[in-house]
Length: 101
Image (tube, rainbow, N blue to C red; front, side):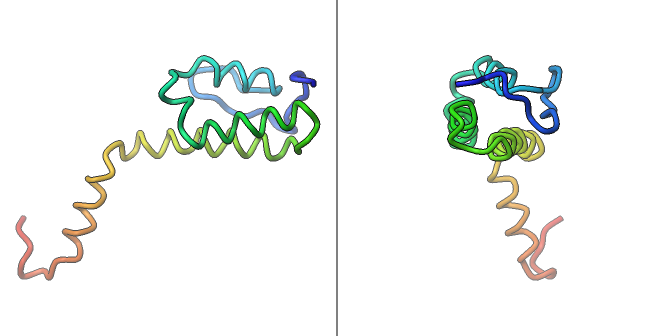
C-alpha cells in the first residue's frame, strides 16, 4: 500500500494547498466534518483512494472521485436549498398570465 503515489496533476482543494499525493487527499477528507465525509460522493472518493493506494485501481479514478466530491460541495454552496430550485422551476412553468411578480 502506497499513500505516497502522486496524482498526475495536483487536485485543487478549497482553503488548502493542492493534493499532490493520495496521502494529501486522504488527510483532507479526514479533516472534513463527519457529516460531510458520510456523503455518497466522499465515501466513493475514499474507496477510489484506497483502491489506488492498494494498486487495485487507477490513479485517474482516485482523482475523479476527489473532483466529483469537491464539485458536489461547490454545487451545494451555489444552491444550498434544493427546494429553491424546485420553486423557481415551477414558477417558470406557470403561464405568464397567472404569474405573480
